[in-house]
Image (cartoon, rainbow, N blue to C red; front, side):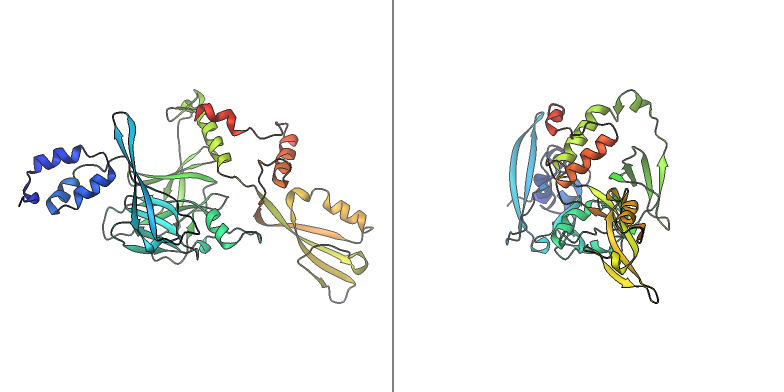
Length: 372
C-alpha cells in the first residue's frame, strides 16, 4: 500500500501551488502531518467558501457553502457543500476571518465559532452596545437583523492572545470592540459614522461617511481613533484608490438603496405644563399634577421635524395656558420604506429635498445599473 506521507516535499509543493479551490486546499491539509506542513508555505486560494443564508424557519442544522474555482480568467465551476453545524443553527452570520465566523443567535448573544474545529468563544451580547434601537414596533428578531452591520476579527500574532472583535452597529454606524469573555462592548467615541472597517497588516482602518480615513488603536485605554492624513489629489482628479469616484459613489448608492434602507429621525422628549382645562385628547407618556398648584405636567415624545412651530401652536390652542420644553431624547427608526411613494418616510425625504433645493424624488437604482 502506498505511503502518502512519503511523497517528496518538492512534489507536494507543486501540487499545492496548483490548488485553486478552498475545498481542495482543506482536503490537502488533512491528508497527514507532512502535507499539512507543506500547505503552510502557500497562501489559501483567493476564492473562499461562501456561506449561504439560512432561512429563519428552517429546522435543519446543516449549512450550505458555495465553492468557486477559477478556470483561466473566468469562474467556471461552482459547487454547493453542506456541513452539519447544529452549534450555529438559526444564527445570523455578521463576520468571518479564515475558518472563523461571528454569529448572533436568537437571544441576541454573539459568538466566535470555527467551522471545522468547532471551537466556540463567547462575545458580549448585542444588547450591551451603548446605543440601542428605541422602536416599540421592532421585535427581537428584527432587532437582530438591524443592529449589527459587520464584525471584523483581528488575528493575534501571539497564540496566547485573544481575538479582538470590531463591530459596526446600529444605523448610526458606531464602532465598538470586545474580546472573548468580555461582559460588554466598548464603543470608540471619537470617530463619526463608520461605513466600513478592514484589518490589514496587523492594523485596523475605518472609513467614515465624511470620507476620512482613521486608524483604530484598540489596545489603548480607552480605545481611540486617529485620523490619517490622506492626499486628496486623487479625489480631486476623479479617482479613489484607482476607481473613478463618481462610479464608486454610484455603485455605493445603488447598493444602499438595494439593501432596504430606513430613515432614523431624532426624537424630543417634550414636557408640557398646563392647567387642567387645557388637557384634551392626546397621546402622552403620563401626566402628573404639580403639588400645590392647578397645573399638570405632561411628558410625550415628538419627532424633531414635527416640532417646528409646536410651542406657538400649543400656546395658541390653549390661550397661552400651556408651554412646552423640548429636550433631545433618542433616535428612532421609521419602519416605512423611503423608496415607496406616499409612505411617511418618502414624504419626509421629499420635504427635506424641497427645503434644500434638491430633486424631490430619490434617484432610482436603474440609473446606475450600467456602472455595476
